[in-house]
Amino acid sequence: MALKDLEVSFARPSMLAERNGIQQLVLAHQAELQDVNEVPCFFWGKLVDPLLSSKCLLTLSKVVRSSFGPVPPSLRDPIVSAGTEQLRFEGFSSCNGVYARLDLLEEAIDGEFLAAGTTNVDFNEPMLNALNSIKKSESMVMGVGEKEVSLHSDGGTVVERKVTLPLRWVKGLTSVQWYLAEMEEVFVLQKLQVVQLFQSIPRGSVKGNYYLSKRGNKFLFSPLKSADAVQIGGIQRLRLLESLLPYVDLMRVYQAAGGECVCVVADFGKMRMTLALSPDNYRGFSGEGNVLENMVQEVPQEWIYGLNSLLKSNELFNPTLLSIEHDIAFDTMDSLTASLSSIGLLGYDMHEAKHYYRRLPFKTERILSLNPRLKNAKKLLQTDSVQIIRREGRILEARVEGSGVQHTVLIEGEQARCTCNWYTNHQGKRGVCKHVLAVKMQLKD
Image 1: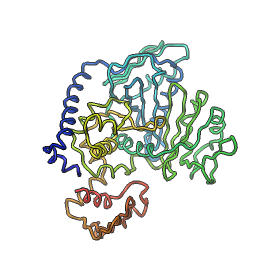
Image 2: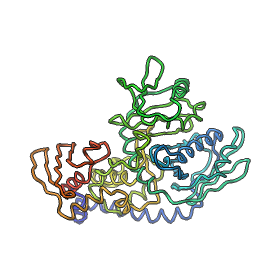
Image 3: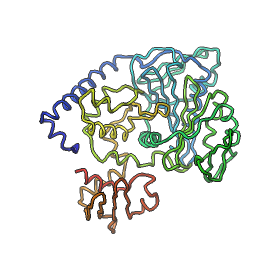
Image 4: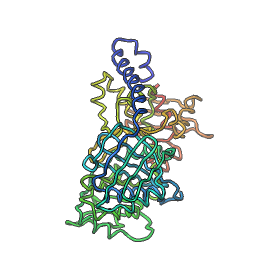
């Protein structure tokens, strides 16, 4: 059943349980907002390994303050999520081509979680200086609240206030999780192998792709492609992890379908650092459009509010279990999951191979303005610019009005092609064009 029919169908007995379930979630959402407002902070406590924690946070800050494309460094804002007995710190490089996340696991934290939530702060010079001064033997206490993040050490107290979340980061979050969820583990490197490999990264600016392969018990970088090798564009970006190499227990390397994006996860036992790289220096995650197809079916905003009341920051996301516990149809939950992913409310944990929930200070209705292809596809439908020419089994052909030209869209099963310049230039690697998107949206109506 299409989502637009669900509102009408709510009156039928078969849909009543689902409607009641969602209404209960909305009421819970309102009650939870009141509870959260009464809690002074989300987390307060010690970090068990202050030296390693500070070095990981400095690495994250280094990512955020860097740029490998035409965009000059300008951002300093990590996203901080507290919940499910762990802290997550996330950020992008200013060019949006590097995504980094630090997971402080339960073993790395000795404190109390008073609530679950997310904030977004700047790491300015006082915070960086405080992190740089941390010694292995001293105490390090952190507080994470809705409006600030504080650090308390022998050198004093530093407080960073909440700032506005960059819209470019929201767009990046919607794309990077899609790639991470499609990745598969390719290599696992032990500590000595990691150190030796990073010593072989070419110095200076490197043009073209490099390839990571294994020969015997040794891992190598080469500009020449070989079988079973992992493609890495902008290889110098891996140097962002250099200061952490002495502390790494092991490192896992993941490759996305299509072999372009790559992700490495440095495992320290009590914490993990994830670094995902876009295909090259000049291609940011925020420019990808693969999540647009998940937004073909629109989901009522109150449903997302309902799930938001149920899920806590950092909680692993299990749509099947949610469907069963709250009497929500599986196809409805699939649409809700797609919508949550498409607006950055779901992240992806490579170690657990599952999505987790992320709360953001972001209104769902604004997603349209952040995705011009989606906006333009809706305009094509509003002007009756889509005409279905042929439907035979799994094959569909359509004509879509362009700027002074008619484009042909051919959909065969899961594959879609178009005669426009976007498809010609990217061959589907950066998401569907507005013409294919408009045709798919019309099919859902």
